[in-house]
Image 1: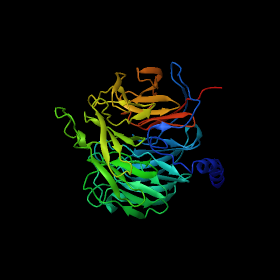
Image 2: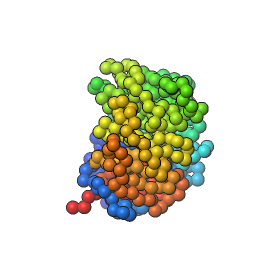
Image 3: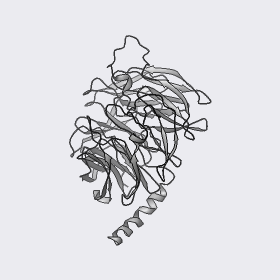
Amino acid sequence: MKKTLFLLAALWLPALTAGAQEPLQWRGPARDGHYPGTGLLKTWPDNGPALAWSCTGIGKGYSTAVSDGITTWVTGMKDTLDYLSAIGPGGKLLWQVPVGPSWNGTFPDTRCTPTVKDGSVYVISGRGTIGAFSAMDGTKQWSFDAAERFGAEPGEWGVCESLLLSGDKVIYTPAGKKTTLVALDRKTGETVWQSPSLSDTGAYVSPRLITHNGKEVIVTLTATYLLGVDPADGRILWKFDYASFQPEESLKVWPGAPKTNTVTPLYQDGNLYITGGYDHPGVNLRLSGDGSSVEVAWSDTALDCHHGGVVLLDGCIYGSNWLDNSRGNWCCIDWKTGKMNYQHKWFTKGSVITADNMVYIFEEKNGNVGLVRPDPNGFTLAGTFRLPEGKGPCWAHPSIYNGILYIRRGDALMAYDIREKK
């Protein structure tokens, strides 16, 4: 056993060291759906790219996998607990450790995508147990009930957050009357700062870190507000009441829509874009030069993304909208104006990411995966296939690492080789 661990450590150490400058995390390095890499296939064979491996036994989940090219980490629910699993080459399950209690309301499967940096994996369970574990063997480094400590008030679907790292701090959004965001020392789990409370419940959004005019800002949403927070001390720099934003008085939305936020915001050149499902309008906001306030640049009613995320590519926002909980179309709108470029029916709504100037889509009902050419003039597929394994809703966002496309459905994770063959 000791010899095996030594050999595994020898394999893992170079990869973990190489990734030390940039965490492996939710929706890519910048949390905007962009994954690095070149030399990826621009068209797929009729039956899709080659399946490199598949793995079952990870537990049920809607969370995404992250990988350093050797090891892949993912969370899953078994019985009443959320587990963190590590998968090795060929899809072999290496180890599995409990994180904490799963959400025990509706849709309890795991939501947290692991955040990996410098040999540690940071995760939070659906009920708010937060912890750090060894990336090599799953040894617990620290863990506690963060929901209890900070008086968390999650939304009706529990904790749906993937933890953010800012320097040596872990960022978590308990919401509630005590605080809104907190920062923890990522080595010990001790509290570094607590932001003021907005007396709001939590949303289902993973925060992201942006750099605006040379200053880093944490951007996230609660049930009511889009807000910017200073990562140094937790000061709330500005907030925008997104729940009340409805520029068209005649627009009918589902009553709970304004407070059901699921999509991590986009950011580019001083502007932020947020969107929500259920016919709640999306809005593009312009940050002031000093980052102390925001103002509306434009809004749109076409791309009301349910929970599959959106990506910005070459001046266009790509994603799927909400027609009802079972239906949605694939859309492209203009980043500068919000003008609709196209709306196309392809199965139903789902998640979207991008890499090597191509768009990857994953519809949520039957597990169809599509490769789309980015083009504001129309929706053009360059390949499609259907996942051969897994059960339940296809709500896990895909991810891409080292030319491998990772897609999860329930208890099954599949890895596809999408590299161009030389």
